[in-house]
Length: 120
Image 1 (cartoon, rainbow, N blue to C red):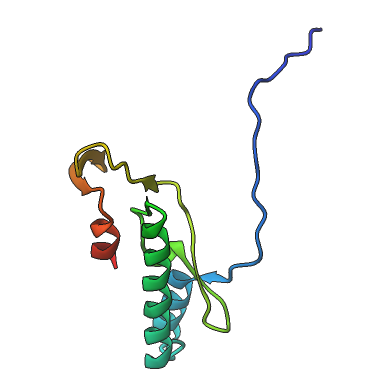
Image 2 (cartoon, rainbow, N blue to C red):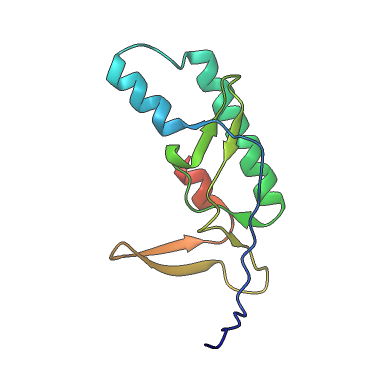
């Protein structure tokens, strides 16, 4: 029996625990009827998200998939942006529009970061 050599290598990134997804917190709040996230928390979460987007856009990265399940929150209300699978870098040499076929619809995505702000 011959051993096959694989030319594919996998890299894994291990990070600190990021907390539970914001979607889980919102679903739990809806299910139980109790208020888990108060107005002060909401202001702080939005502030952190805007800071994260500013940092990403300053590095010419567009996330393109911001949603509650891709945002993680700790008990101290610290926010982490997750799932950069659809993220793209902005090219300054090409035009400002990109066509993308997603879920059967054609979307025109701007490469200037406005899509991330729109998803906010």
